[in-house]
Image (cartoon, rainbow, N blue to C red; front, side, top):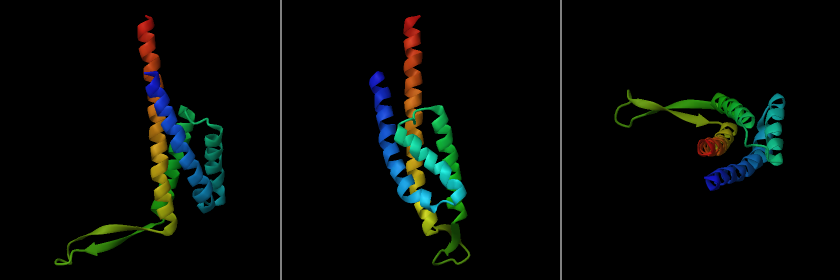
Length: 135
């Protein structure tokens, strides 16, 4: 069981390296100055290795919501009609270049959040299982 916990932690740490690079190399420069400190703080916490906690997960999820909102705000929609019936069709999202970067990094952030959740849940399951055996 401890091997599973270790693997989840390792997965989260590996993903966090990628996320930190994305934050430092792409995202922070694209954010408004008032939003940069939040992303910088997340990057610093990743550098410190202090990511396997409910507090960090909550902050990461808040940043995901912020970045998703920013990406959505920079995305427009166009109508794509069907070739044979102009009255029938669908809307297609067209993200700006900035929004496109946000969407790519959002996928990595969500993967990191999932890895952290897996590590926290595996550690909790390990503790509960050990408590059952101790009684």
